Image (cartoon, rainbow, N blue to C red; front, side):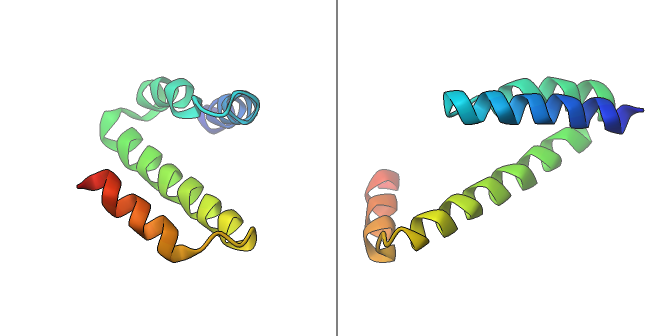
Length: 79
């Protein structure tokens, strides 16, 4: 039953995040902490963030954005 509740909230959070553009982790993290505890919720959200960012990289790669431009932007943002 816990899985179905998390799945429903995840689908709702993903839908709202897709419309608004951000915010799914803000909605999903409290539910994960409530259901599984913080020790399990944090790695789950970390894996979800990595997967989301990898999908964005693949989508940008298909659109023809150069990897060198992205790396230089990342380098300048962290310096």
